[in-house]
Length: 146
Image (cartoon, rainbow, N blue to C red):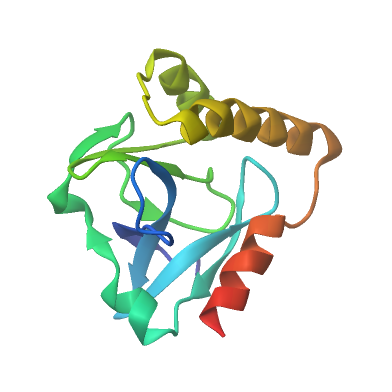
């Protein structure tokens, strides 16, 4: 039987806005983040065990949500969700392709993000081409969990 993980919130690791954020999922009372095989698919769900990170989860109902899919339950093999917190109360969640479209319309004043967003999109496009098995960003995240 395939496990279904319910989308419940986000984790903003650096507590800055605007920022790319981690979608958080709940399964059997525990919290998880998605691990991906590439830009497109969820490989698995990794358990969040750090109490400080768990306390930092922001529920989705705190945001005006830009989300093109009403899907809230996810399983291994589903499309990866990209999260981007625009403001204190505005959040984008969607696939990489949806984020690329959304980013074209996004009005960002933050100088770092003006550079980071196109860089992120280019990096993701390159990952699609080379089909990496694991994302380096998870290495950073799991170092933070230790």
